[in-house]
Amino acid sequence: TTRITIASGGDVSLPTTTCTSLSAPSVSAINTCKAWFNWSHGNGNYHTSHNMSSSTDNGTGQYTFTFARPMANANYCVAIGSSRNGSSGNAANSLDFHSTATTNFQIRSGNDGGSMVNHENVCAAIFDTA
Image 1 (cartoon, rainbow, N blue to C red):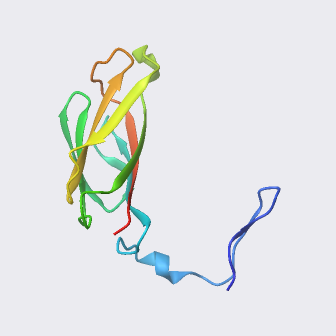
Image 2: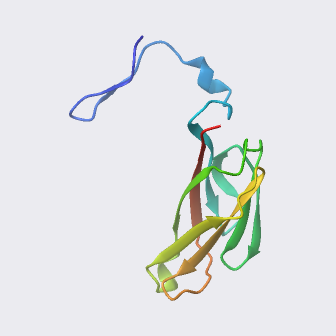
C-alpha cells in the first residue's frame, strides 16, 4: 500500500494511483468529517461546502445550518470559526453552537461586549462517530 508522505522539509509525496473513492463523497464512513462549510453572511451563501443544503439567518448573530443528508444522531461535534469585518472595532469573537438535531444545528455569534453581532464568514466542520 502506498501512502501519502510528508518530508521534514514539508514536501508532500502522493501515490501515482488515482483514488476514485473520493469522487463520490459519503457521510457513512465511521469517524470522518460528515459535513463542512465556509459560509458568507454577506450573501447568505456557502462559499464551499460538503453535505450542507441550506442556511437561515434567524436574526443578528443567529444562524441555522441544514444538512443535505441527516446525521445518525444529534451527538456530533461542531468545530467552528469565524471572521468579522475589520471596521467593526471589536476584535474579539464569540461563537457557540446549540440546538443540534439530526437535520440541522444553530450557531450564535457575538462580540467582546457580549452583544449578538453578525460575523462575515463562518466556517464549520462536523464530526460524528456513527
